Image 1 (tube, rainbow, N blue to C red):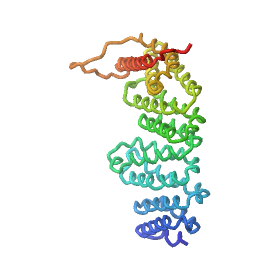
Image 2 (cartoon, helix red, strand yellow):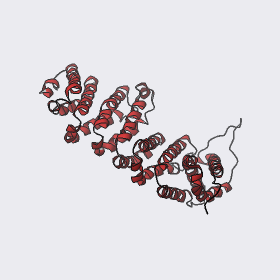
Image 3 (tube, one colour):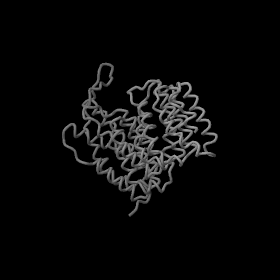
Image 4 (cartoon, one colour):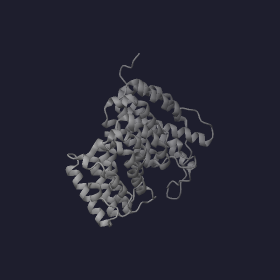
Length: 380
C-alpha cells in the first residue's frame, strides 16, 4: 500500500523525509480523485508527528495537512485518533516560557499547514478540539520575542485566528471562548486583548443572526473585559497601559456587536454594566480605588458605542448621567513629585491621583458626547 511503501519507521530520517514529501505531493495531486488509496496513510503520518528530528517532523506536518485537504470529510471518523497528537505537537512547541527558534518554526509550520487545512476543510467537526486550539492561538499572543518575530509567528497566528473566527459557527466557537476567559485572565492583558479582538472579528464575519441568537455568550465575553481592571491586585498601579488596552478592545468589540442586536438585548447588557459600575464599596482607600476603577472601565468601554450611536444613545446617557455626576466630587490629592517635576510612582497609593485624573477625563468625554448628540426633541 501507499502507507507501507512511502512511510516506514525503520528508514533513516532523510529517507523518511523523502517518503513523506512524496506522500504530500501525491495526496495533493491524486487524493481527491482516489481517496481510498490514501485513507490508511494518516495513522502512519501521525506517528511521525511525534518524531523529534526536524526534517521528519516538518515533512509529517506537510503530509498531514495534504491528507486533510484532499480527503476532507472522509477523515472525520479518524479525527479522535489524529487530532490529539496534532494538538499535542503544537502545545509542546509553545510550552516553554521562551520557546527556542526550532520550536517556533514547528508552530509556524503547524499554523501554515495543519491549521489552515483543518479550518478550511473540517470546520464544523472541530468543536471537541476548539478549547485546546484556541488556547494555543492565545498563547501566541504572549510570544513577543525577536525569535517569534523572525518567523512571522504573529502574522500567521492572526491569519489562522481570522479563519477560525469566520469558519466556526457561534454555537461552537463562543462556548470555547468562554472557556478561555480563565486562561486569558491568568495570562495577562495581551492575551485578553487577543481574545476580545477574536470576538469582534467573529461577530464581523459571521451572519448577524448568530450574534442575536447568542448575545448572552457574546456579552459574557465583553463583561470579562469590563471587569478586567477591577480584578487586578490591590497593590498594583491601576493606571497602566494593560487595563487600558483591554478596555479599548472591549469598547471596539461592543460597538461592533451593538449594531447587530435589538434594543432589549443591549439594554440588558447596559443595565448590568451600570449596576456593577455603581455598586457601593467600602470607605477604605482600597474601596475608593475599586470604585474609581469600575467607573473608569465603564465609561471607557461604553465610549465606542456612544460615539457610534450618537443621539440614539441618549436614553442610556440619561441613565448613566447620575453616576457620572457622582464622581465629580472625588478628592484630588496633591501629586507626589521629585526634583525636575517628574512624578514618582510609589505603588497604588501614588497612582490614585492618576486614576482620578483618568476617571475625570473619561467622564468629560462621556458628557461631551452625550450633550453634543442630545436629541433636539427628547421623547416625552
